[in-house]
Length: 311
Image 1 (tube, helix red, strand yellow):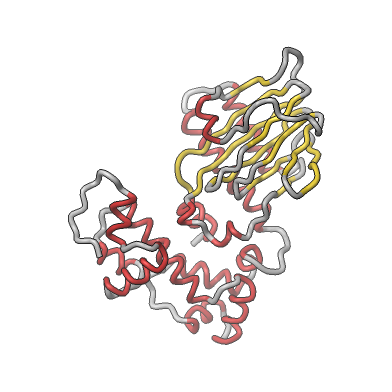
Image 2: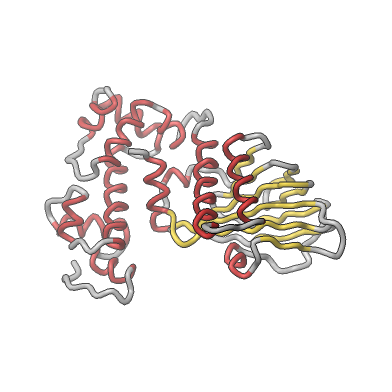
């Protein structure tokens, strides 16, 4: 199993949004903090500065990409000290903007940016994403990201048949490549290190492949070719939690997705994530989500009939 693909599948929700913007100097725009989202900025032409709390201005030029995985607020400006003249905007504002917008006083546009954002489900926030820094700067020249940006710009400026399907797919491609740039860098600990480590990565893939298997520390250790104690130390040191803690977390995450997205009974969901007893499953689920599985399903699927009794 591909752990990153699993993480994105459970976290992604709603619809990805993007807008191509030409800015006329002087200009500044504040972007509001939006918890439960992740966003990116690409400078296509010209220069600007990104300002954020607790850090100096970040100078950006053509081809530079900034990834904000936790939805913190920031301001873009050119010149860097320019103050915003309009209220902060958020990803939801893209719903009411054309795919291509021009902002500022009449005159020649000096900077062009491509912005995009994804909605993430806070209840499904994977510890991999929690490991990411507030800002990831990818300098110009990343081949896969540059190719995806070119395709996005082409679809936004000259849409054709199928663009409504292609643009969200390209935005999701951007998200994968942005996460890959972080995960493939050299990190001493954390999820990037854990996925790069052959022992812990083998165990993680096994859990994602078979969440219902009767896992123990010993069977997980065998997946990575280590004995029990060294494996448990290695897993905990790299990923910040014991292996069985993650097994339970992932099982409950899979269970929540099944409750929201399928008509499987609570008993069937329990069995598919490794619980022979509905009551043991319900207790574990409530510890994670604060509500029994049946009630969680009704809350997550308003208007849908539920025929079974909530545990």
